[in-house]
Length: 338
Image (cartoon, rainbow, N blue to C red; front, side, top):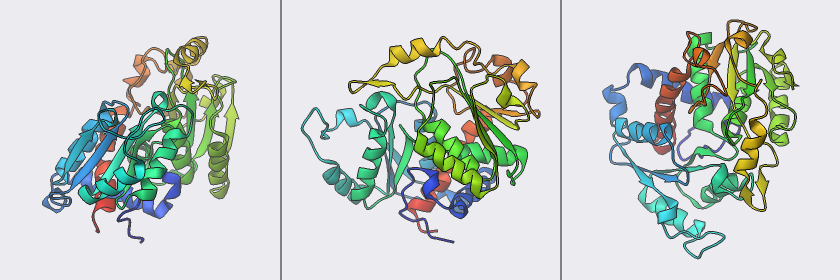
């Protein structure tokens, strides 16, 4: 199997299924043997830099815990407090910053979401610019296009509850309403990685909430390669029928940016109109006793009702925990030669 040392993780689509399985299998073993000595010294004395353009709840906690449990250190950095060049200010270029940080740390994570970019794709471009100049692995901690660590945590949860063979299982990726303007990263990553593992995929959303057409085309290709089904529906209930997994999540429209800024209030005003688009017990009864999942934080009462989010078929906390274990595996595999 290919050596993953130094490999960037910006989107799971860019890794082979065998490489993704290597991460998942190591993460599963790390979860079982969390404080085993064979894992607690893997990154001894090594530092992982974390660039947080956006704040987080689980991401900072899970990466810091991951580094500590591997014997290393995760250093929290806020780009706004650093002298980095931007479109509006002078400062150090990405090339210079990346080359210097490569002399200090063993890896670099970057988190940059919808409200810190002027247009969709700008965050992805930034990660790839760092990857171009860095000699250390660049790990997406969620950006405007993709969220690979979340996608791997999702699949790890599905493997636990549905079995390791996910082929033929149906994923419903459904839009949820609320006072939100969320990026496409978690949703698009889920669609890509689940289709890589052979799941049938249904995407359900109100008209006007199309995702990135290039990503959808890739999901279709993944499904075709696995002889799996793919469909899009604008019916609020139809997609639930026969689903094995329901993933309800708000996301913004393709027209969210106006003159280089996120029109957050406009997105919220649009989203609040679609009150029927909530995952509730009545819709879940249409499924094949489906699991409910969500990357969190959840907008309870809008994206999903409390009785579903906290119900017996919810795996949200398992998936949240999995972030720790898949990130430990990613860091160990990319920052140390195993």
